[in-house]
Length: 470
Image 1 (cartoon, helix red, strand yellow):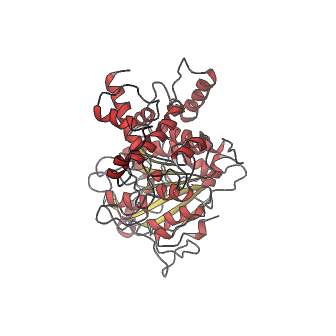
Image 2 (image 1 turned 90 degrees about the vertical axis):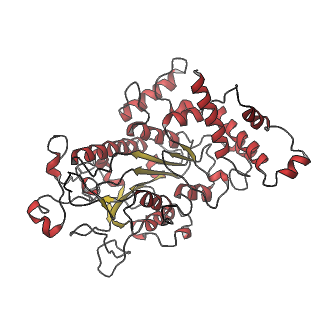
Image 3 (image 1 turned 30 degrees about the horizontal axis):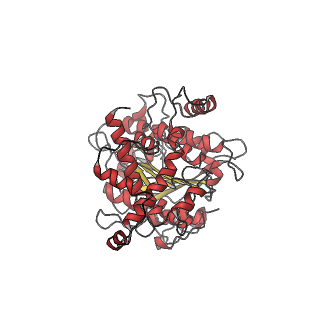
């Protein structure tokens, strides 16, 4: 192993150890008990949070408009231009609204999609699309953090815990790494350190962090930190360590040693390794086929990231995975085709992920989608009119996608206006447009995610959208 790679692995080991800090991992369950309890069994309820970075054009995916009705000559009236004809340079894109083919046993689709929805449309029977959400902001950081926590930020500073942290804090799962945050922020304002997500910025960081620990340490500080493990806390040390940081670090590193001892990195390696068992390499080949991965594997592609979500859940490594799935959507300039291509890449990856989970039996019965709740979101949408440079600007109204367990399927809730696609007023009991109704806010969606698993949603200070709960 190269020296710089070894140093990165070492830094990730220590960083991950610190990230798992806390007096206990699972509330009252000490770290030593965790070492015995962690058995890589899939969680009975899993959660996936997928972020489209930059602000998506919902006309291309979750909230389409018929170009035969919203025509260029009516723009001054409707303030909406779908722009689907601008995708005609790529014949693989439809140039109208997409109605999915009926899935056997599911009935016809109640949801229509834009041309960039790709293979995910095949799973309309697992979805609830929420439209006309009032993001109250067109600032990237504000909208992003608003949806992560369900609380409107103070300026651009996040308030509250991430929804994944809230879930782990309440459910106290026994998975080795309860929450992974891949290329995405994570917050914890009220739970022990055990509820913190393991944050990584790219696939290689995750693989190296979960690799067996290094044996060589060239920093004296690192050596002293490692030497803390197993030492008896003296009265003098206890007196100086009033906040318990020495004990926390020692126990955190013990936990990480347990995690690393399982060689979890092998689970996230999809290229064959000649020295590994044939069965493991056959499993890797199946993953490559399911997600269309080719050698050398681009783990940080949307497909590679989607495969890692499935691995974390199916192998029982994590309960919650939060991930920045795709970027390149802040397209103020350029063509509709660029934005549509980026979106479709991500939707196709999610489609393959859902196919994988639907075809994978869960130990508790049914398949993994029966036990998994998805939230797919962006920080806001893009204007329904194309600007003078061929792109779209920031728009306050947006959509979100819920899928899987606890959610009513094949359903649309809410509606953006047919003039300018402004945030809609809806009857909360039905989700239908109502001039005397209320707007949908991100906290309503987050409360719904929590309520779908019968968790306490009081932290959101709102009620869930009960019409879309099963």
